[in-house]
Image 1 (cartoon, rainbow over the protein chains, first blue to last red):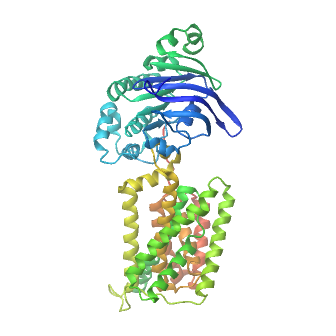
Image 2 (cartoon, helix red, strand yellow):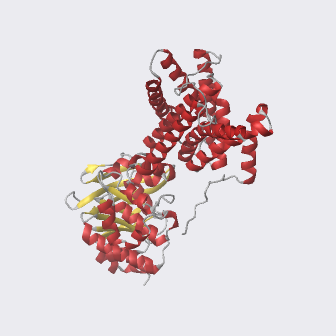
Length: 238
Length: 290
């Protein structure tokens, strides 16, 4: 794992909540300009891994962002360096309007956020219709779109996506992943996506890691992992 | 009829002051879910600072601006030094600190400035009542200042990037930090703003009730009633509630219960709101689809 190919390098990452240890020494990297998937069942530690990167949980180990350590920095300082995080539950500002949610996404950026908003409406035309609406009244799919758009407003170098398919109807999930393909092609952002839905994630990812009870049990190119017999049976279900 | 209208307008004037303090309470409540019981005493101390400056020969409006500025800095300092360490402490610890600050500020003011009532100058002069004798000059002026402050605060929260970040930090601290908003600083800033608004309220009410260390005790009670009446989660509600309480207090005092029982009307309002509609007039239940 080297800085040249990996925007984010994680080395022997341990983390947990209070006395409960959740991650037991993870080593992985997020490829530059590509999608990396972190797969695993419920409770494997996927969300905790993202929280560790964003400085939301106590950790030991090393996290290098573009070769510089970011472990120990405050969450808002990590965001300011260009790490956008769509948390589990989407993190919508329910009481605020769609417009204000997007403006907040651009909080670390100086200058007029409106051109960026227009760019987001290109990806998510539905958000334009709902521009002035209170975000709490959006449907789950629309809130997920808003969450991704909000994160992109930061012009992230690294985008962390926590279960973008969570709680959504299959049709909506397909729509969102189709839009994500466009975004990946157009924005060139490096993405770390966490998913329970392994087939979805493997379809857009370049590299993947499989997490089981806080340990990485398999890693490699997404294409190879998709072919793996054991993964197919346990995670892809065919 | 004239007497009634006079009572009504006079109620709006004092209501504006309750509205300001109610807004200060609600701002902090929204961000931290705590009611700052020391809000009134902070305003009272600010007013003493203003009086000291004025007596030292500083022109009124310069003293006004200096006082508001100093109060904001002290408000930020209190949040940063006293309340930030209690962030994860149980609710009762914070309540204890608020009540402790109330008693301390009150005693410190009495110790430094004595408990005797002091007249506080009005910047709007004495002169005869205006607008057909409905408004005294000070009532008109203080209502204007209050409305100006409330509008400025509203515009700040509605139209500025910082105001939006402060609202976001109050609603959803985790998401706020993820988009890069320094939530701890926003909280401190909120305290500063609340202290500044309180200082204005103190300076506006002092010419009417005279300045003494217990000056804000009644005002805080009315403001609390106003905040509850409007809905403690809604800043606009707090303002409307504060104005309503001012009017109810004045009309009730003049025509129903008499001046001696005026203060107990605040308590009646509090009890009635809590029994009949705990969310207040404008406390909204958020509509959300999942």
